[in-house]
Image 1 (tube, one colour):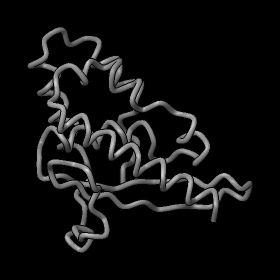
Image 2 (cartoon, helix red, strand yellow; image 1 turned 180 degrees about the vertical axis):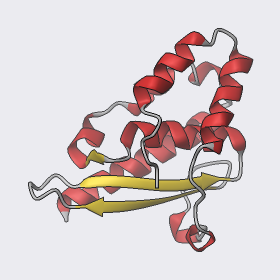
Image 3 (cartoon, helix red, strand yellow; image 1 turned 90 degrees about the vertical axis):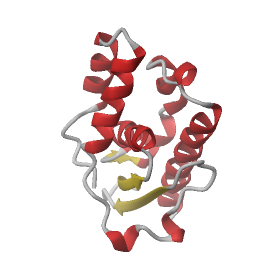
Image 4 (cartoon, one colour; image 1 turned 60 degrees about the vertical axis):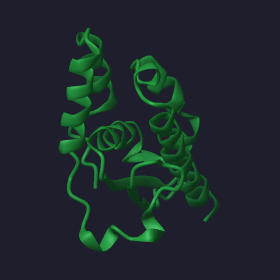
Length: 145
């Protein structure tokens, strides 16, 4: 599970310090390498994120908070270094947060703010959207449960 040791604000600040896309690209790969390993048992079809050109697996743990706004924690992996970095950015943004906070967060706006949209292929951008949609669906399901 993502342990929030690197928060989204720190990632945003680090991206702002990097002027060259090559440096941002390397940083994104570093973020992906920082993801805790996903157990082999979780690399199953049911955990695959549909709509990604690369393979992406994601698991979600839901913990009640006693107030009807559960906390979601995510774990994941990808077979592509850049995509794994995108997973790490999404987990920094969403993991360990309440379902309502996740639904109120515009991950696509962050994606654009970090300058990722113009530097990634359309397939990677679509995959990012698929991951965002999966996280949002999990948050909605947690609220409905």
